[in-house]
Image 1 (cartoon, rainbow, N blue to C red):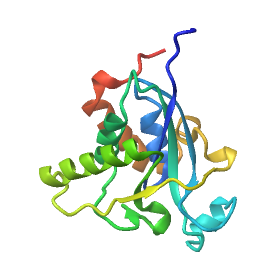
Image 2: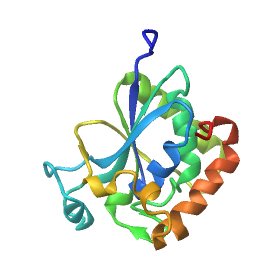
Image 3: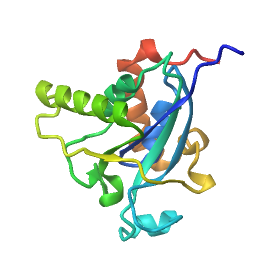
Image 4: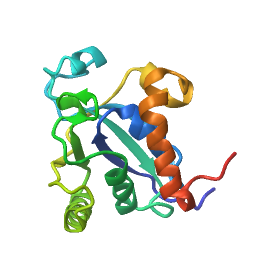
Length: 184
């Protein structure tokens, strides 16, 4: 594979990182997804600290993707359909600043594409309410603890996974069937 293209990274927060990870791992062009924390002021935070709502961090995923197979814009189009970007600091029953809707851009191109997609989502009034999605430059990303990685894949029958994550994954699969990775 000497012709391998450059892998790029997107950092997105849209509620619980387990939900985002479960969707993005199935998207064509995505090489890996890492759950973690960004946007706060406490170095190397733990899950318990982030849940304590005092670190300023959001639960995020870093999506490592091949831009020749899936564009940053396509990642954002998925992003705006798999979480509610109109509710500040919450996704359903998950409440707190760690669940905010946020895009941490890595460069000027990502910032401009994010502004474009956010303007399109606003103009289409998909959600029937104004977007509260934050758009910030990425400062530092801290990977979450090992037990948070691949959470849905490892715990599909856990209550939260069945009630919250499984319906999001099903909705994603239905809407983006042509963009799913081929079954192994």
